[in-house]
Length: 465
Image 1: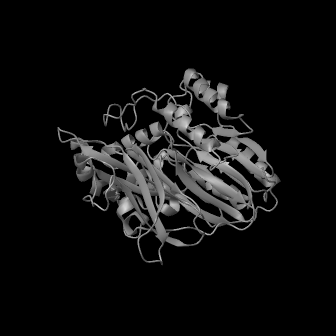
Image 2 (image 1 turned 180 degrees about the vertical axis):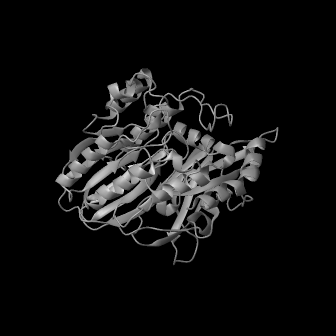
Image 3 (image 1 turned 135 degrees about the vertical axis):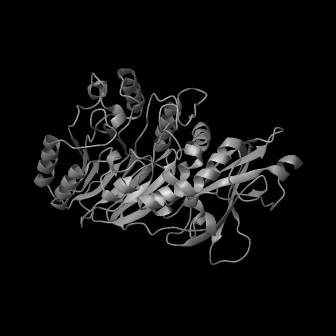
């Protein structure tokens, strides 16, 4: 997405978004009553099911989320607990679609995952709560022509050939220790506070819980920077304690530094995790994992110092064909530089980016570069003709509040974005969805293809977990 187009989206929505936030009005189409359920008359007639998002589509499953609200006596919109139902049928079949998901437990923050679908097939769907069909919010990312939310149709993908070897969760921007979310400048906008004053802890716990569930079954976790809010010793030790309860650093989980982790005076983050501007390297059954420190002191943008670049070139030159996943906090490409709202100075500097492209060109085993920092899902294209995917992943600590699951098969890999699912995480994700005057979804969610895609590649030399 070109910078002018992205900024046009923001400007086109700012009046509606700011007004909606100011008066508490959800952005939605009118409610449609389709069926009778066991709710009171007033709730049934006034409930609104909105913010519909088709978040995840794999070869055999789909994940949808939405929110239900109702006006209180003062006329303000409030969360309204209701049931969760999704009807799904093949797109080429006529008739009423059967309910493949039904949860009668009331919630205002709906999360429905439907499995058992056929790979490579189109499906039509309808989501309901309290008798109302869920509709997308008035955001371009879900309302533009051709989106599943606007057409009511999604298509499962064909998985890569071969057997599943390893599953790696890609995450970033935990911001452990942050107290106010949604600030652009100090005190502007006003931001949002969690009732526990610890939204990063709530979202991190939800992430770690999700990854251990059988339907995710992540073997490893990669955290690409901004583990802390400001790199203090307390924050660094606190986030490490939570991660250590999940697994071992350097075996189960891997981290790199982000600009929020950079030292102000003493390098507390470096003492708890890794020294500054040094790469890390690990072997996962033949898969090489390299973490980069792209941070600059007292700056939001990123760089790679000459010794670290030299070390990276040396390591990749030694085994140029070894399957390699690289991660660093700052996005690399020119497209990322001009499309993020903060501009080119917010990402990796152009000299370091050019050096990385040059190094990757001589190391065909590098297949993916994961970054964070921009708090958005975006599958980027390289600046030159190298076969490397550059993937930005949205923040864990706020909407959409999730992670990218990288499943590596002998014949390729899939990348699928998942929101975290605990009730407290879903509630916070819904609140922070309206950050930045309601414009956050158009920036952060990313297109369906950004969030879900498959790549053919030969990983037959890797060992299974």
